[in-house]
Length: 259
Image (cartoon, rainbow, N blue to C red; front, side, top):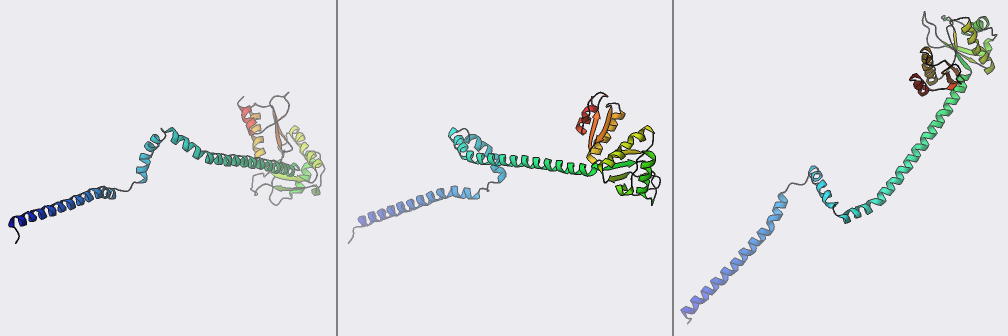
């Protein structure tokens, strides 16, 4: 038969063990909760936006670049890329320069071809304009009567510039078959000037050169240059009577206008 005192002691011991075990389980549970809390907080944090990143990035870089080792590592990592990009840029600049040179050469060739084509032509202003006229016959008669030059209709082709308008005189473009005959006709302008005829014979110029000539004539009227004329598609001036002729462009004339 068991002793009541022993039974009571055993019961107290069992209760103590159970209580201790329960306390350990509670402690473990609490520890687990504490471990979970930071993760819960992180899970609840809003995702970083691009704007947020851009705001903090300067400070991060500022701190990083205080470290010489970081700077050296970045320089070493970036150097091959910079060298590659530098080579590409140099090549592109050379290609661009070569392309510009080719374009300039093509422009010169086109200009030369245009000047050669126009070299056989003259532009005449001031010959009476009539609707349904026989323009070549008019030019043959004009050459004989006004500049003492005999030509035939087979020596040239001609056309009026623009559409006919009553009361207005359109300019005439004349293209000769022979340069010598063209030059003889062109020199007739001197006779027209002496006889004060209101007919003008000029070179047939491309638009750019015609603009240069127009600006040159403007300076001549303003007495800023002595003389302006064209020869084989180019514009020449004398600033003073005793000066040598100078081939000019718009930039040259602009400079002359300021002196």
